[in-house]
Image (cartoon, rainbow, N blue to C red):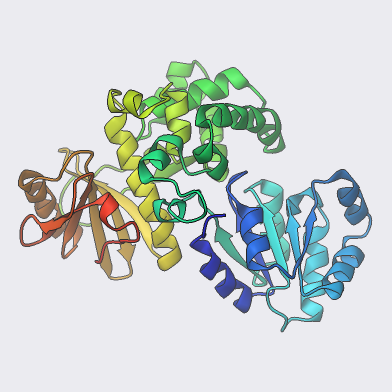
Amino acid sequence: MYRRLATDRLRVLAAQFPAVLILGARQVGKTTLARAAFPDHAYLDLETPRLRELFAEDPAFHVGARANETRGVVLDEAQAVPGLFEALRGIIDAAREARGRFILLGSAQPALVRGVSESLAGRVGILELEPLTATEAATGPAPLPWRRLWLAGGFPDAARGDFREWHEAYLRTYVERDLPQLGIEADPVFTRRLLTMLAHQQGGLLNVSALAGALGVGHARVARALDVFEQTFLLRRLPPFFRNVGKRLTKSPKAYLRDTGLLHHLLNIGSAEDLDAHPVRGASWETFVIEDLLRRERLARPFSQPFFWRTAAGAEVDLLFERGDAIATIEVKAGVGSPRQARHLSDALGDIGAAQGWIVDQGQGAEPLNLRVHRRGFADDLDWLPPA
């Protein structure tokens, strides 16, 4: 079992709220994390037909009884019982001072998010569990090197085995089971084509109209599908950063398939040699580093906001973290950062309002490239986050 960085954040939320909701994609490790963090809590999988029927009859009685028998309850796939959230509200309000009694698990389905927002507002803390980071993958009885994680992606089972077989099965389940639950027609051909088009445009500016035209479907259908991909943690839309600097700035978000294993599977990349020879290599490395930094930044600073920066003339910075009044600025390079690249980043820092910038690459060591820009190799410190 891998040591998950989210464990400490989960315990902080459980000490503050009566209930905690762990959101994340399927097979990302939500159940493993919850059971390891709360071994004295009873575990109930509400997708099990017998339990779902039992709890649907009288959720307040059954949840209350289980909570009274133990220190708390882990409720997996909580959205499977529609009346559960109203029942939890009554149980929580009857003993409002009790903390961390209920741990809810689920993917970001409308029934789950709506139930939490309508019935449990102010009573539940929310933790988003991401796939493995490189520092997490290096722990456990079978450590995974970061290059394997880059190729196979951060889902534990995919990273340990045949990642292409795993992602193919995952996509099939996603299309046949998850999409219909989200109100999307189970259309494998359309879904595969759209995801593959996004893969070919990885890290590029999102143009929904162009995607719809290429697919021969309406704008609304593609926009709805993209919303669902984002809600179910397949897609990240990274927003642009704006400052009143008198320059024309890009206003469209950048689109990334969040897991590089899925990206590589869709592009028929099955080995490190295939990846090194593929045109998507640079965008894939950018995705891998950005996602790794984002996952750890959100745990270290939950209210930090991520952006990218690009002018109409083409000047660009891959990732910014806005931390209140401070801004951390990161450029990602698949090679080794150079003084020329450092000059371009330095030119952008004044417009962005950042004091210094960082180039993260595949080289070794760390060094200053000029007075305001430093470079560092990704592998030298897998726990590193940029100072502002």
